[in-house]
Amino acid sequence: MSKHCLIVYPGLEQGPALAAVKGLPDLLKAHPEGLCRYPYLFATDQVAEARTGLVNGTLPVTGPFVATHAVRRAADLLLDEALYEGLNLQLEVGGRRLPELPGRAELEPLLRQEGTLVRVDDKPFKPATEVLGFQHVYDDTVRFIDGLKKLGIPQEALFLLATAEEISIEVHPGVFGLGEDPRVPRLFTGLLHHLGGLKRGDRTLVKTADRTLLLGSCRPTHSILVPGSVHPVLHRPKVGVGPSHFAYGIAAFSDFCGKKRTVEESLKELKAWLKFLEAEIAPLPKAKDLVTSLSPLETARPAAGPGQGAAVPTVATPAGGFQPFAAEVRAVPPAWAPPAGSLSLPWAELGRALGGGLAVPSLHVVAGAREEGKAALLLNLAAHAAAQASVLYISKEHDTYEFAGRLAAWAGKAALPELALKRTAAGADGEVARQQLAAGLAAALGGLGEHLFFRGCDGPIDVFDPDGLAELVKMLPDGRPRLLVLESLPAEAVAARAGYAARLRRLAHDLGAVFVLSLHTAPLPLPRPHLVEGPDLELLAAWQGVADSLVCLQSEKVNLKKFLAMSQGKVDPAVAEKLEAWFLQGAGGLRLKGDTYTLLRVLHARRGARQAILALFQREILRFVEGKAMPLGRA
Image (tube, rainbow, N blue to C red; front, side):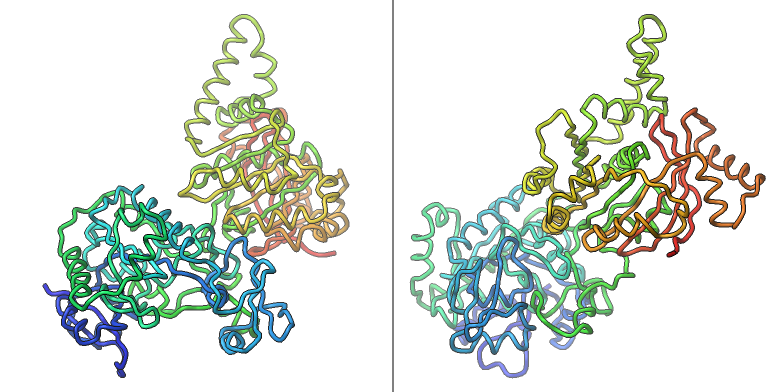
């Protein structure tokens, strides 16, 4: 069946026209300059159906997958639909630096004003001045191609095209084995974000190492210069390039792209591209599995519309700007919407209190006096998260062997103090204890796989060096969320380092990771734990502005009766006995000498609600059995 595409060219007045792909050479003869196509090919020959279906995401389409890298001028950086990690951008108008960037409607005329400057890391540029030149384009393209080849995509499935200012990578649609499918634009956008190293920021996407990637490359209405067509500004055609052109560096590359071509030479470029599309390329299971598992990184909720492809925007949206609250809130998911990505917790009530788990990215704080169970809580959290994320667990108080023993007791449900005493003994008792520890550790390691990394107090890591922590997090394997657990930080040491907490929050968001840290606070009595008062207010003053959640732990046996008194106004012995039996059943009938009850008091949850949650804490095996919850009030 013949494939079609939508095209635009100078002088076309009624929007994109429909053209048969095989008819593009005749169109190039008629319109040698500025002939552009939209990225996707389709079977329908009805222009209205094609236009509507592309916008709504209902039209079955096929590739090729397109990723374009282009020179970025100072104005482009401000108008881009993503922020740039590590670049500080400011607008200077009439000698005054604006504290925030305005919205696009106000920004564009300001960029055209005489005397306007764009400051990039405080260095002034005129709006039309190149900031990220062709060397950046070249380097980013090479890195992107390496990412494609790691998927097993062969050279013959790649078609590269270039002008003096951009390089486009096209991947044969056969590689992905999708056929014609309305999901293709959305799936390809997800792949573009993945290979381009995009991250989700607070309100917009964030570019990392790949700064010259055009995020609209896979947008259904993105205009792509047809091979052989003359660029209307550069006055040179878009031409095919290959590995040999990359081998000689950017000077030779630019010279090749800057040459004039005859009409016949330009037509050869287009015909080579058509031959590439006609080739039969077998699907690659690895590439298909990846592309079908990805979704575009989104900070804004997509507009409602029919079809599975409707979430791909059809127009570029600037990265941000000074604008009315109504416009801002429409551009971000509301606080009550489920997080776009989150790590689940092993406790349902705590997960609900935090708004559905640990949103990615975010910073969370677990506070309490010593011996309240914070480290045990974090061990449970890390072990559970290892099934979903790459986890780096850093302890200020436990070394590698202690942590292994704690994991063994947790997984084997064997009392750690008893095993620790017996394991060095001679005879049968010592052998049994050692076997129990070995079996427990083997069970724990089997569940963790290769996704938990540990550094303890026997190592050189400085937990108060945010940049060092960031480098460690970057070393975690790609392909899944990343969780950093910082266990046993003294609250007074954190408070003494001005800006440390805010720096951790920025790093979590810059890295697209979840940070969880536990704080040792002073032991203070809580006469009314169902109320937020006293020391709670001090913790909130320190952490509410930077942390996404703040949970305080207090463990003592009387907490069960306290919880009943708080929730029911009295302690009914029969109800208390029934609740104890319920917890024992949840623990599988295992009763230990050190069993106690923990109140997990959620003082702050940016996406959730203040709650007091009662849990059975089995200290010897580092396990929690979650129970009932009640709202926290204010004195």
